[in-house]
Image (cartoon, rainbow, N blue to C red; front, side, top):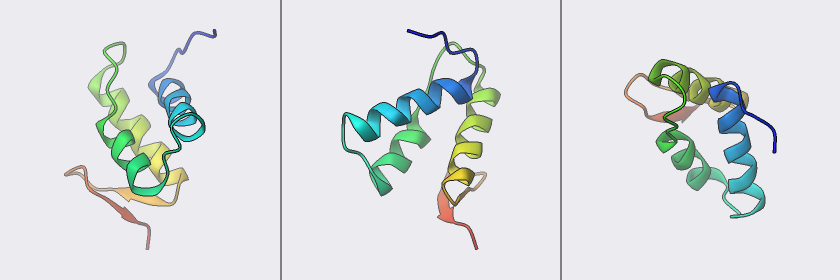
Length: 71
């Protein structure tokens, strides 16, 4: 097992699991991303990872935590 050195890498690994093993997609996946937490990383790093990943998926994460499709 490889060591995850960043919140981004850790969240990516979780997303892979949620999609491949749990069958999550769309709203369930967005919810899991929004609620993801890992004590190994600072809250700021976690929020940045969530925002970056959601943007790659074509969504915009608002300051209040809500997610919407990019315009």
